Amino acid sequence: MPAESQRTPGHALRLRDWAIAFLLAMAFKALYSAVGTLQLQWLLWPLATLLNAIDGFAFKPTATGEWLDADRGLIIVKACAGGNFLIASWLGYLWRWRTRTPGPVARLDSSSGSGLRFGLRLGPSLGLRLGISLALRALAAAWLTTLIANTLRILLIAHGQDDLSMITGLSAADSHRLIGIVIYFGILTLQLAGTRTLLAAPAIYFGIVVLVPWLHGLMAGRGGINASHAAWTTALPLVAVLSYGLWRLCHRYALEHKRQHQKADDDLPNGRH
Image (cartoon, rainbow, N blue to C red; front, side, top):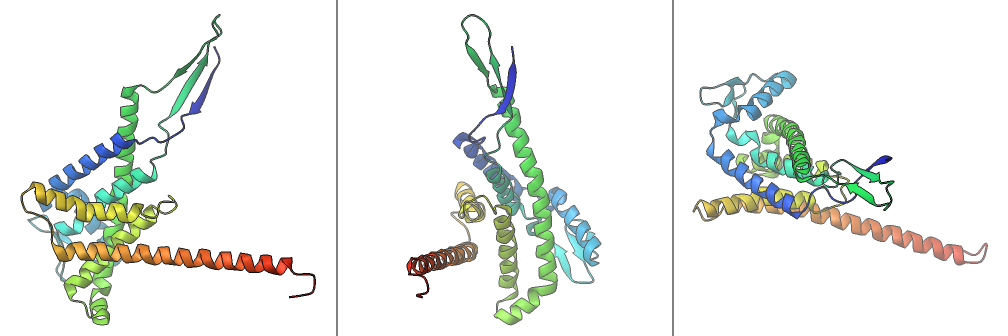
């Protein structure tokens, strides 16, 4: 019986898979909020080590799990671990790889009298293993992306936060927050570039940074999240998306105007312009 291998068409991730991914994100968010800094060294230790290596920082661990550079007066705390961005980046990679097919499917042609063709498709257990494999690969990529984002964020805070406050008139806290939003949202947008989904990055970012904490707060009986934080987090990505959308619209209009003008010139008799 000759057999040929081919890949299954369609989406590897279905609505049920996204529901499971969202529940996992909620569970990780709850766990991340509950643990202390000592339990986040898998995020903080590589960050401090990389910063010490590339820019001459002198971060050393403290008894509470934080990392202190006494010479520069900088400390890496739990909030610097980027747990929210890790979740967003993980979902971003799942979205980027959502159309990856789970693997080859064998089609066997029977030479028996009936001439029936049998397609051997992936069983539930194999499909589950492939789904777990995809989730783990996305998590590994998200961990590396988070390490890069956190490194860039702290470098900008160390070398540019004071200048940003001086130029914009923002407080140190707001400058700190602005740098974090620009870095995290910017890298998530680059991560999802080429997926032909303009709203994927802001939807994931807003969902993880605003929606999930809001739902978690309601479930914990706190009744919501900080309004100022929600405003900052929502406004900047929204401005970025609207600006990009406006640029695309103007660019498309300019191309269409140029095309129509060229067509009008081509329709004129030779020598008359």
